[in-house]
Length: 463
Image 1 (cartoon, rainbow, N blue to C red):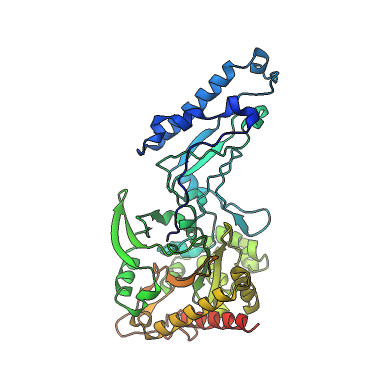
Image 2: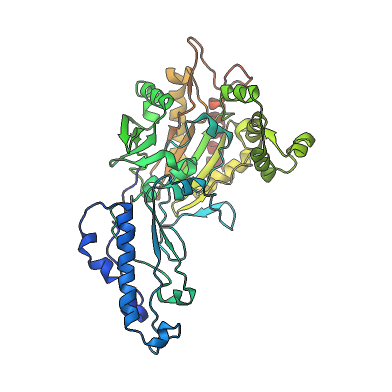
């Protein structure tokens, strides 16, 4: 999923005039080592950057009087710059995977801008996903979305030096250095974050994206390419190897959008397979982590026994989770939204009623009736195709999403994504996709959700 790339990271821009003698990173700007379009290893980049910074600092320090070297401000008011440490974070590092989600102090919205600042801010790559949910069954225990910037490839961190008294000399770095190892995800992959599994994706050639291999999802895409639903899903381009791992290669759905806004709607009345429920019951285990998640959303949800144990079972948590959102009653739920300005909101766990969902959509389209009508027309087209699809009739579609994408030019579209849990039914069995789910009938409520989604958008047009 790809949007046109922005300008490549270029040469350094001059620092503020007052600190020009000490702050101009001339070594970075003029170094032939960086000007050549060769790819460097992470270690080489770190060493090169820090060496250049150290050289600039040493040259500046030699020009300062002794009092300044002892921490006193020199007569000209110029202090040697604080030298940041450069960390190039490799994709899917243990630290990134284990880091907690970043949260905005203002609520659910998370800023994902791409400024590079010394104050430990990241060179963000603002990511959201086209094929976002994980194909692993274990991941279904919690679809809570997280800030996954830290898992994106090629993130740069600049950390404070130890001498805080000198930070004004280089308080903000606006220099963009062309480091070939850093992958410019930027907005082109800004939808991976909504899916909550950024580590499953890699950049591919122009117009394509790689998703971590799943045999089940690969087989689903092979069938989808022969089904009328082909026009409603990312085009599948086979399996490729990258860095010793296998990936499925898919179309980048953001290719034709400039500054897209994206919404991920998880379809169906449940996001777990019947097999998962059965497996969890066969080996019941009390989960303190799920209990904690439950009381964070609703302190009154646990029973007296669960409160005494400070734990709940996985089946109990999975079923409770669907009831607090619109999944159980409307057949879909909003997972997250990424706006064109880079803000992300995943705080929709308790968005449950039709009116609440309607308000979210109104805010998402920002009152643009042209975009609304395009979304509605596309959903109606998808509905017709689903009704005639042999693939849809013969599969239990769980954990799949509808991805809504639009931009400021009025371009808008919707696709079906995420087939890691979509399961082929036994020979001869088909699903209605509307009737209520009872354990054993494998109904997923997908069409129930689509019917309600279309109805909500129609009601917005009538207002």
